[in-house]
Amino acid sequence: MKLFPKPISLKKLMGPSFIILALGLGSGEVILWPYMASNYGLGIAWGALLGITFQYFMNMEIERYSLVKGESVFVGLHKIFKYGVYWFILSTFLGFGLPGIIAASAQIFSSLFGIESFKWVAILFLLLIGCILSAGKTVYGMMEHITKTIILLGVPFVFILAFVLATKADWGMLFVGMMGKGINFMFLPEGISIATFLAAFAYSGAGGNLNLTQSIYVKEKGYGMGKYSQKIAGLFAQHKEQKIKLNGEKFALTESNIQNFKGWWKKVSIEHLIVFWFIGLLSMMMLMLLSYSTTHGLSGTGEGINFVIQEGKVIGTLITPVVGYLFLLVVSIMLFQTQLGVMDSTSRIMAENYALKKLEKKGNGTINLSKIYFTFVWAQIVFGILLFLFNIYEPKTLIVLGAVINAFAMFVHIGLVFWLNQKELPKVFRPRLWRKIIIGIIFLFFGCFSVLVLLDKLKLM
Image 1 (cartoon, rainbow, N blue to C red):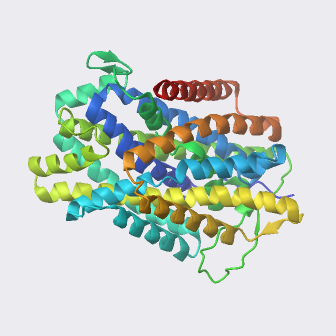
Image 2 (tube, one colour):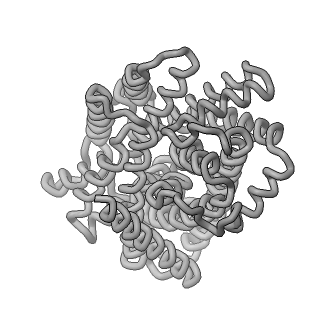
Image 3 (cartoon, rainbow, N blue to C red):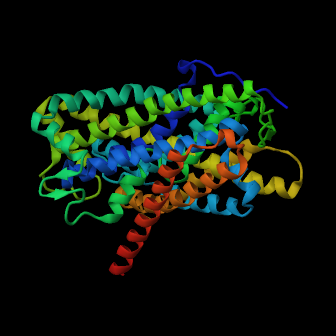
C-alpha cells in the first residue's frame, strides 16, 4: 500500500491542460469555428462555448480516475471490458490518422512562399514531427515545453490582432452569438452543414479519444497516485530498453488519504478551468472574431481553408503586409504544433491499448511501451504520406471527416468512463449527483448528434 501524495502548488500543476488545449488549436479553434464565422457569422459562437464546457466536465471525469488509481483509463477499462482495446486502436487511427491538420499547416506555409503543390511540404512536416518526437529524453517533458512556448506566444498575438481589427459592432455580434443569436437566425443558420457543425463542436477542445489522453498526461506528470508511475522515454534516450508498468498502485482509505485526494481534485479542477476552459474559450472567440472581422462576406471563403489565407491578406492590407505574413506563419506553426501533439497523444493511446492486450497474453506486469509507442508514431506518418502520394490531401475535407468519426468516439468514451468511475472507484471518490446529470446530458447530446449526421449523410447517398 502506498500513501496518497499531498497536493502540490497550483503553479507546479500547470502542464497537462496546456497539451490537451493545444490539441484543439489546429482543428476546432484555428480552422472549423473561424471557417463557420467567416461563412455564417458569429451567431454560431454558442456552439464553441457549449462544446468546450462539455469537454471540461468530460476531462475532469477522466482525470478523476487517474488521480485515484495512478493509471490511465485504458488500463481501468481493460479490466472490465477486455475487447475495448480493439475499439480504441481502430477508432483512434481512423479518427486521427487522416492528416488534415498537417495538410492545413503545409498549405498556409506554402502560400507564404508561393509553393503550389503543398503536399510535398506536408510530407516533409510529417517526417519532421517523427524526428521531434523521437529525439526527446522523455516525450512528455519535451511536449509540455514545446506546447507552452507556442501557446504563450501565438495566442496573445491573435488576441492583439482581434482587438485591433474588430469593430464595436463585431464585438456585439460575438456577445449575442454566444447566446445563440445570429443575423436572421437562432442557433443554426439555414444551409449550414450539420457534419461541419458537429465536427467543430467535437473539436471545441481536443475531441475524440484525445480527451482520454488527459489521463495518461496526468499519470506522467505525477498528479495524485500518478506519482508512482513511470514515463515514456525518447526513442534515442539512453535507457532505450526501459520496461514500464501500466497498472497503478493502491492506497488505504484513511481520512488523510481522502483529504489529500480532495486537495488534488480542487487544484486540478482550477488548473483545468483556467488553462483548458478559459484560455481555450478565449482562443476560439478571438479567432472567430478575427475571421469574421476580416473575411465575412468575401467570396471564396467557403472553399477549403482559403478563408485563412484571405484573412492574412486582409490583415496585411489593414495593418501592414509584414503583420499579414506573420499571422499566416503563426497559424501554420500552431497547426504544426497541434499535429505534433495529436501524433503524440494518439500514439500513446494506441500503444497503451496494444500493450494491455500483449500483457494479457504474456501474463507478466511489464512491457517495453516506448518501442510500441514509436511504432505507432511512424505507422501514422507512413499512412499520412501514402494518402498525400495518392493526392488525398484537401485539409478541410480530411479534418471534417476525422471529426465526425471522433464525435461518435466521444459518445462511446463518455459512457465508458462514467461506467468505469461508478464501478471501480470507492464511493467517496465518485462524482456527485449534479456532475452525473451533466455527464448524462453530454452523453445524450453526442449520441443524438451523431445519429443526425448519419441520417443526413444517408439522405445524400
